[in-house]
Image (cartoon, rainbow, N blue to C red):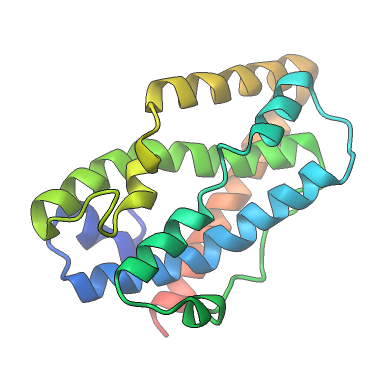
Length: 186
């Protein structure tokens, strides 16, 4: 995700605090509805693999609250956060494979987030308590998080849904790119 234009300067460590806040606002507008779609799938009762059900129930993939926390710390009132534009052109998350594809975007972004968190700390002095909680993954051990998710990927692929997961992940990344392109130019 760090290669998407609104986050490029942030990842390089040469974004101003204002540019970083604008990037967070834009990111929130995509991540909030993406996570909402995954939560809707999780609550739908659609049959899923045991590991996927456990992952969804644990809720570690939910990080919208960290974006909200960062935006509040950076001066945006809660009401203004609720009013931020949100992407309505989300990929479908009606099947386990589609949900896993969307989760791939979220879980993979944690890895890139570590790089961004380091850049934010060096460039702006931000950490998980002062505006970089989302990219710091709330202090979670990234190796363990990725390992849990990789087990879900392997389980879904073993059930014959690997190509559908890849397509769903591709659709999620395409939707993110369109959102950034459309809203970033606005």
